Amino acid sequence: MHLLDLSTDRATVGAGVFLSLTRRCPLHCAHCATRSTMRAEQHAEAPFIRLAESFTEHDRPQVMWLTGGEPLLRPGLVRALADTARRCGTTTALLTGMWFAGRHPAPAVHAALRSVGHVSASIDRFHEAEVPRAAVLRQLAGLLDDGIDVSVHLVGDGADDPYLEAAVEDIRSTLADRCPIHVSFLQRYGRAEALLPEEERPASSDALPCHLASWPVVTYDGTVVACCSQLAVDGPVPEHLRLGHAATDGWPVIRSRAESRSALRAIRTFGPGWLAAQDGAGTCGGYCATCLELGRDDVTMRRVAERMERPGVGLLEMRAETVRRQTSAWVDPRFAHLLELGRPVAA
Image (cartoon, rainbow, N blue to C red; front, side, top):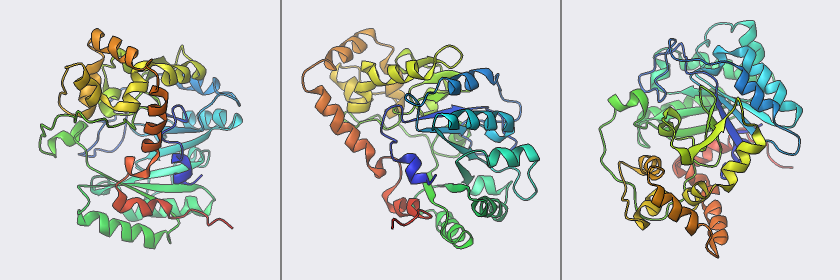
């Protein structure tokens, strides 16, 4: 499945789910948002399998993204999840650092790569210090030749980073424009905190709908979080963002909680900065940090619930979803055309 098709319903609550299968990774990238190492935590497979088994033909995410750490350190789990999800119509996509590029992957890794519907490779100057770009592109070319849809998640220091221009040209040329490219910029999470200057910009008090709280994330230990912000995933998870645990809560319960909870509806509609400003709580440390703090104030949460029961709020929710559906909500417009690469032309 093409990357844009996987992302079509990025703003629709429960249209997708992220599964963080492990925090372990054999690479040592200096910008790693998850601070992954080979000694990091890795929990039992059972909660992830149980969640996938709770999908049904009539109640399932359309897309299940497998992430890490490095998910291909657990190739058997990747295959089991992909096979289970496929039976009820869910497409599985995988984000990998391609640590095995440059050599023949182990049979289990080879099978896992071909069990999913989409493989996305991380490429940036930090990965390239350990995994040559040419080797990654050769692996992606082989997957394309085998009929597997692929993409590249390309990270640069900013829109004017010359690395991005050179890498985009190389990827497009080598893969003959068969591979979409998602461009993002280095963020101050995890080990990247040491690479970027500290910023003291508070969250805006304007209404800015959150586009991160639509697809739940199953974290490394099975905890289910309503938001894919790394701050929330790292925990501790505040109660207004906690949707349950994969070991005990099936997909219908998780989806229902994500859709119906007033705090999440408000965050998706107005954004945390606006909500904090309404009750005089003030913003703290940025957009996501303000969201994490919202749930610490019972009075604020009660007022949020009351606000979401007011007449006309449903219309505002629909408008906010339209805003969140815009591609610019999750990719810089200057690079949006790269998402179209490799997409079949309609007859």
